[in-house]
Length: 151
Image (cartoon, rainbow, N blue to C red):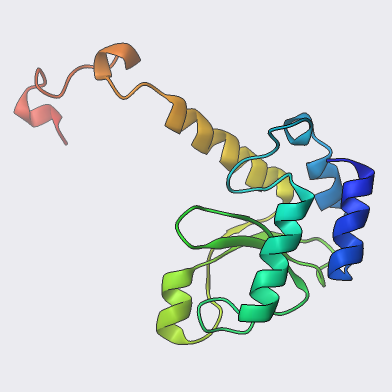
């Protein structure tokens, strides 16, 4: 993401982005045509759109505070966000099921830093990219394991 795109986010949302968030978006995986991960957007227009939507409509019946910045989605109806009021912002997951059931914004995961969150995404991507076939992974096939080795 470019400095101009970051400035556009700040202007459109009337916020000041934390330096650690800016640094995260300046990483190589957020440069070029296809940027970021599903869970952590590297596209300024997407970030602006996600934030304007929850500011206007709320999140699963809960009011969305203006100082919470949506930074991505998990693909299952949950939003990753950071609290712009914090000096050292963490990344949180707004859980749609818990929020709907409790009629207030509820988070279910927390990452202490943007670096922790990006490391989680890298691990997640490597797990998804791993071959599903046990023989391709070099693992013993479950059909060949003795019953006592299943536990």
